[in-house]
Length: 275
Image 1 (cartoon, rainbow, N blue to C red):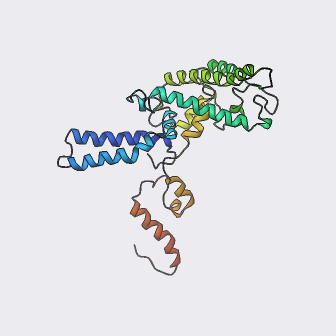
Image 2: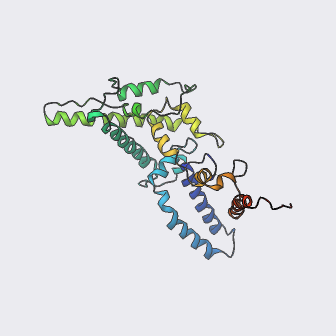
Image 3: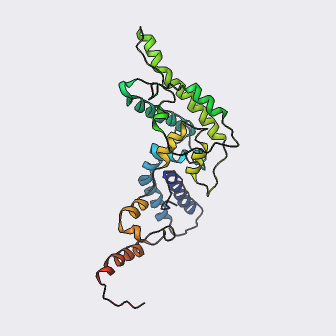
């Protein structure tokens, strides 16, 4: 699955956990007798080499944004872990607020809430709209995200006001509303039916974008990351002529031979081939 055309970053953590679980079970249940020392060394090597991916916020969010996994991939994590449900929710809030602040700072003059047509959408309005969405029939929306629209979701005018305390309260208000709105979306996301194994997560987010206007922003960013370089190699190298959707699991040495022949046979146009 890591090398499939539409593979995404959500596969990294689950695949690592499956590999570690298989090694652990093989060691404890004696499935591979006589290889205890090797399995022990392999288990330690996996912890050393792959732990960095288990702690990576991008990988964590990618897995969380996959509607098939959600919290399921982290249900056995201990409290305080970077992958515990509580830590993930804080990470989601932190990442979206950071994104919101970045988009707000890009606006002309750094004034939040003034869009191209003077629009000023508040968190309360967006939350109420998402709550009105029908759980049974979601509108057919495009997955073409509008960065400006998402940047305006919880923006508020920050005009100069007399008194430092009043200004501080005004600057904190958008973040507070954002937290409440994200927590509301997380609660709804948790109770939604999980995507089946063969389902397309990108289609799922397209259909549910209206219900999760904030989480869909993070899904666009973190779920779209490919877990390997296979697809890019197919696009930007000779391998793209050898690997195809119907021939995507060639052994490495076989693929190298085919690439070699694909390039070099054209240099021998007069050679008669016998098959």
